[in-house]
Every structure is written in structure tokens, then in C-alpha cells.
Image (tube, rainbow, N blue to C red; front, top):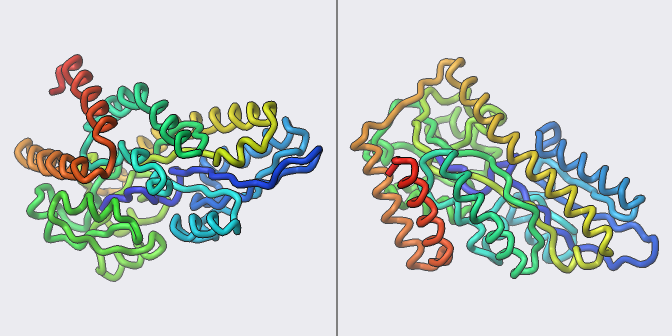
Length: 339
């Protein structure tokens, strides 16, 4: 079902740890990413890297390892700790350990529409970046991947029916397990690379993904129905470790900030358009979009709200940030009559 915090492609962070600058010595930031070549994110990253190298006259370079060749988030973080990598492309879950609030927007069924997301993000993205900075990461914004929707091999709309399915969860993703528990579902953990085979063999019969992810990874060839329920908002952040950033001089810091901030903003906007096109493409290929009844939808949202409240009590994310997000949502829904 939900591709919580480790979708392969658009949700990325860059965490740098570089050698001290000395004179005209070039610094190479070694960055591992799950995003394959040819994706919009990789194109942006290479474009930004080229601009940074040009504008710094070769003093700051990026060496990018795409497509998960350095392993999943867990493996990459381990390599960062031992200095095997200078940087990493990770999703929000990749930095949850040092900064739990980065997954604030990931709580299940928090948002009902893209407009709600935009309203909250306009008011809270900067606070998330400030929180990263307090943990010694310099953030350059949030990049959307999109809403993850349930996609199945049979028509299912209710929670009770969903509990009987063989649901996939990303391997090594505790956030996904917590979210599934909201609906009394015990998912089957698999690496992303094994999901297509799992669908083909019947090991799993249900996934959760933004439309663009389902198409890019060919998962759509093994599903017949999608449920119009925005279970999770998937996104990433782009950051550089403070210790790396401060080893750049002031001019280089400004250049890196300008290029990466602009790049993240561009990918953020592009992702929304790509998902809209992908959703239309799924329907054209005969995949049936299901709509839960008002009673069924109420049960989904009620269970998620109860689970989220429990997660906040357990300190999954800070209560202050959660309460602020929910107040913004309440304000938006009151103003638009969507309560």
C-alpha cells in the first residue's frame, strides 16, 4: 500500500560531509540517490551540479550515484556515518532519527486535497527547515512526490475489506508499519525492487503509490483498481550537513543555496503535474478508480485520526508542530466550507 518514506524517485535529501577547503582546492560532494537516471529529479540534480561547478569556477563539484547503487536509506546512512559517502539522496524518513518532525506531513490521512497541502506547507515548510537546521542540516525546501493511493488486484473500498488483502510495505520502514496499524493491517515488507515480482507471484496483491511511481516502476501492469483515498502525502527534503556547508566560503554557500533552492522548487511543481498526467494515464489503461462511500470514508479518516493521536502521545512527532498543522487545516476547512 503506502510508499511511506522511501519511494525511489522524487523524494530526496542531499547530506554533505566534505573535506576542508584550502585555497583553490576543489571539493567533491559524493551523493547517493535512489532516483534513477532520466527522472525529473536526476535531471534537476545534474543541472544544479553543473551550475554550481560553473559558478564556483570548479571549486565545488558533485559526484552523483543514482538508482540506489549505494543501497537503501539504511545502507546509505551507515556509509555516511563512516565517511564512505559524503552525501546522500534520501526521503524525509531518511533523517527522521535526527529530526522526527520532518515526517509531520506523512501522518496517514492528514490531508484531503492538494489545496490543503499547499495551505499548510506555505505556513510550515520554513519551520521544518528551521528544525533541520537545529539538528545541523541546512535545508533547501520540501519536494513533493504526491499522494499515495491504495492500488489493488480486486475492488475494495472499506477498511474491513482492506484488512483481508496482502498489502506491501517498504522494507526497513517503521513508519509504514505504524501507519498500517492504524487500520489493523499487518503488511508484507519487501524491498522496492521486489514489489513487481511480489505482485506477479501473488505474494502481495495491494500496494500504495502515487500514480507516477506506479507507472515508472511498472506496478500498474499488475493492478486493476485504485481507491480514491489520499492515504499519505509523500515528499522529501534537500539538505546539506552544516559541517559541510560551513566549509564552503560565503560566496559558495550563496551559490549552492540559490541553485538547490530553485531546483527543489522546480521539482516540487513538476511532480504535481506529473502525477496528474499519470493518474489520467492509469484510467486510460483500464484501471478502475473506486470511490468509498461517505460511511466508509468516515471510518478510514476516524481510524487514522485515532492512530495519529496515539502517535503524538508516543512522541512520534512533536505535539506543538502537530497541533499547529491541525489548526491550519481547521482554519482552511472553515474558510472553504470543507469541514
